[in-house]
Image 1 (cartoon, one colour):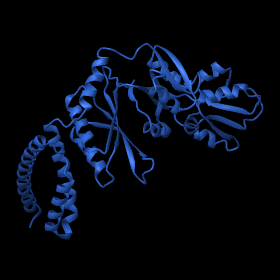
Image 2 (cartoon, rainbow, N blue to C red; image 1 turned 90 degrees about the vertical axis):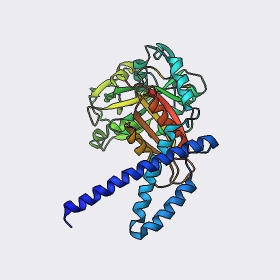
Image 3 (cartoon, rainbow, N blue to C red; image 1 turned 45 degrees about the horizontal axis):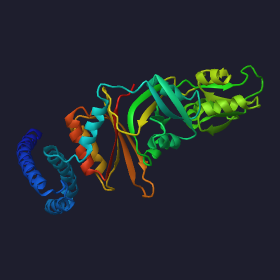
Image 4 (cartoon, one colour; image 1 turned 135 degrees about the horizontal axis):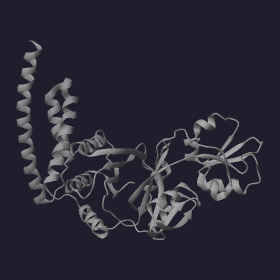
Length: 380
């Protein structure tokens, strides 16, 4: 047969397939109605397995893997359609409605007690002052301390670095998200301008050690690699490291930190702009104890645990694509105590002001082993 004839045959088969698919989805609608009456869950794994086993046996060895993959996707579409027909959202819709209602027409308060990690002059403090007009800042030694201060009600808000444009995700913060209860209510991008600071920039003594936060050290790795004679020491924060250098009696010690730290701790700039990239930005999130959703919130963050089986992650990503949602970030972190199993963090461009998005979130909540709505917020 000629190629054109073969394609005509395929077109005819496709016409039949789409009609059969529509009939199958009509049946799925009837199944959804029956399940609502009996209170049954949308997903029936035993039924799905029975269908796959029956059809792959009919398909034969050559086509069995393709039939299994096809029906896995059909099941995803069917469950999504069934979810959209009824209220399978649990408590999520009410929680979001309450969060929107309590902050309607408002913005982050001008005055607030805010938890930050490190010391005065840190990049977290600079991000905090962009988000809040008159913040009272309480400093903690660790990121865990910031989470705990917000969770326990010691501080109204907390500021945490989440991602850098050159060094990547701050994995320590992601790992702590599993441990604490919080919501993201805002975010701020901050340009990072690392400089090499020391007590006396004109000193003839060669620098033998540089201290800073591990993220700052990674962001300036090219400069440090060009000076292999310099010892590199990680500290808990750039501002803390700057304060350490300022109080040291060593003349061979330097710190990677901001111009703000130089002014604050009486240090001098030995070298400017030592970052790997001039476009060096860090995203900071603002966390709160209760859900706060402010106007213009157009970014959603989720934390999901999925069944440890093939296709579960693809099903979530495919559902977002079907809904036309732009997935901004997908981060995976190991689940403590579970071998080679991961939890996933999703950032997406969407707003809970859209009822279709709330319905989509409800579908995800119903089908994930664990679903945590981290917040809907504006990023400046």
